[in-house]
Length: 317
Image 1 (spheres, rainbow, N blue to C red):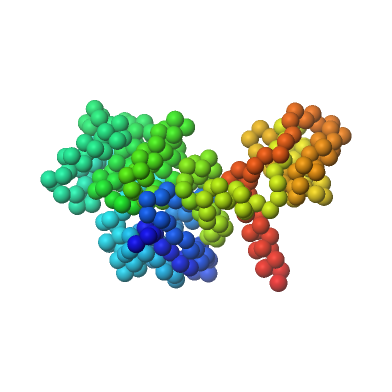
Image 2: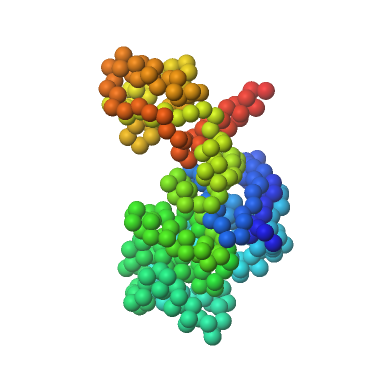
């Protein structure tokens, strides 16, 4: 078995509304697969179908070689799942939460103590075993939730928006834990809407309101998906500059990016000076303008707008 997850034409409808539209992808064993999309883009819905918590309308799927329709119980016993809200019991201690999930996952008693020690060390929770969970910070709860999800030493872990609501330092530390899991042969499927986190993944799937836009490595997505080149502009009057450049014929797209603008054109070298002149003639002070490689955010915006244009054409036909 080469893949930990295999799905083909996965579809979920609620009445006449298609929430997940013919989604197909594979996740290799041992890789970190990032499932990216904005909030509300049904990332959680896909995971819930994969682990048997939500029935699919049509399609095929296997998780750890178990059929997602026929064998949902076997799937849930063999995977770890960390939900968006961490699913911890605030009134219990750290150790009591670990004990509870060990019971859920049927961890044998003869290995439980050793496994708890491993989890506590991994999550840097040694010495906090008797702390009431409600008193922990968001970062500590995050690590405890991961520990509960892997108490039974699964080969596949689903992490649903695991870094939401925690500070940047806790996010960075949590990704260090994900790396360690992957190095130990655990397959990780993680959903997120943070584009910077996607850079840490081996493979990325971009999903936008039920439609899978692309699946590839971060490097290949940035290299192959963009139709055009990116010019980065640092200037004042940011929003005024954005609206001005959107009216220029050769500008294919324009968006705010950090403290500047990213402009998509066919030939960056050809239009660098022209764009600077247009802004200056509009009373804008240009601090820096240069050709840059596309970011994952650039790629995602391009794919979304391309999908929107296709949808518009389909509706007009």
